[in-house]
Image (cartoon, rainbow, N blue to C red; front, side, top):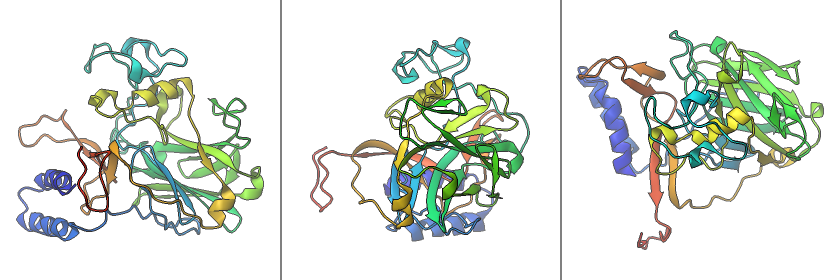
Length: 350
């Protein structure tokens, strides 16, 4: 784990070459962090709820911590829906793109999302990339917080929570997503529940959007939920960029262009799974029992350094301006824990 983090921080430090005092300070920060628990995202309270839960940091996991449902999404998976049949094999009903064969590269036979962000510094090719979504209940209101990888201006992004209020995956079609009955969305800084205005707020410094809605405006739980993001202005499915929860993604060991193919297919069909949530359990401040994750998975690292935001060109060190540097709120890295690993201190055999 330390070696992985060293590589990540070393990459971040490379950007600062030429400023010796800053590099030394950054390295000191890294050295001080060794052996400490991974940093947690700590969103700012925007509408009265202090966000205190601890997420797992593992992509495609959802946990309840201190009364908050925390859904983790992989950063930089905002390639959107596969809406263009010329970009790869057509998506067939019931068949996810990750099961299709092909190579990575322009003109190759592969299928992935077709999102192309508008030009402009505010978008930075990453303005609608979810990395975490939180739900909590406080004072009779449901609070929802969307954490984005990049958020330079509120006018670039719309986020939404899809709610299956009757827990029936065949009824409802909120925003066209089968199985979801209610839509809570924030467009810019304007919130709405099924088109009725609700309080909303944006924190550009923290890359978060929050909304709050009276529980009385929703049927009693339990529910199923998921979240999506799109860039503004919204025109067609082509502007959909990301879903917060896709249980079987990222595909372990896949090439980079295949990491989010399951999501791309499902966004195109508007067919998403839901995460179970009981608002009464959230109101009671419940927490899930933490269990050890084994096998291969993707985890998000919260840097101690400020890396900037967005996918931005880096024409230094012999690179061209078309070589993007991935900056943002968190950085992804791969982890493998042997199935035989014994957390008591005995070595696993692999």
